[in-house]
Image 1 (cartoon, one colour):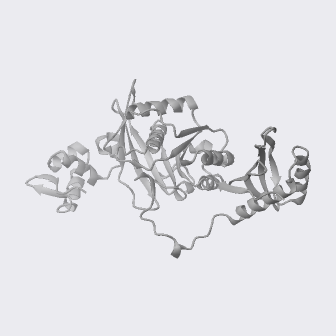
Image 2 (cartoon, rainbow, N blue to C red):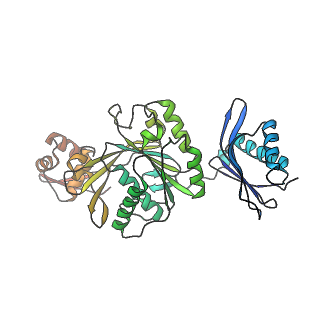
Length: 400
């Protein structure tokens, strides 16, 4: 009989290692079909004098005695081992683990978390799905690349505090050279060298069709954040629930934080990118990205349109300054930009304006491009809690 193997599993991939037999077997792409449990099996050896590759990857029914017998006959002709016992161990261990799924948790015995973990505080919750969506040319990909860089570096920047980790970028739109250039520009703007913990994958197939390869990359490189750019080619049919639901199910199986970039369509409701409501229901957090290109430096805002695990954030803003030496990204106030201010609550726009000095309602109305009646009503509602009045002018009573 063979020795007992060491078994490791992550994201649906099973690795079995027999130390005394110098043998490794990998099983992935598991699924149930017509009464069978099928997967792809890859067999390799580290035994001296043999080529490492023995067999596979091939499709294999792990609950078929006939399939095991046929594979045993084939492997006995390649290298002398107890293949009947090895395959029995493999099939038993993998099928039992696959059918058991994740452990059931007794909530009363579960250790209370200090708080909901964040991969990038305050915008990306740990091991949850988020979506950035907006029109084309709104710098969504640049913003996602910037988040990738600061995540690996683990540096607080522009009010964002990431938990350090490795990043996998699934690219359906450009190529590795373009992505490298963006990383290089952002790194130069931050004054740091090119990060080594960011991995790139040029994607052709949908996420669902390529999930085994993606899982392998997540496992091999200890990935904490997965970025999908962008949603339409990653799902094939983003308007249809039968494609959207498996997409988010596949992302969930990665056991990592995920950020999906999406181009907003005309059929969308304004709080999610496509017509299917599952783009709102399944992510834990959604942000609408908008750009203002009226000045030399481009400004973008993030409007929080959906939050499952807390209240929505106030709009966030960033300025992108491109030059020959790199890309410098700084925090910006969306209320300072004509296109972005439309998504900022009037109360916050008034507050930002008054932080620069006391003003009358007439001056505020002209500066903010808002009706005087709305200005006066907002000031009066916030009187003695946020705003103060001295004569005809108003100021900020306290900072939130």
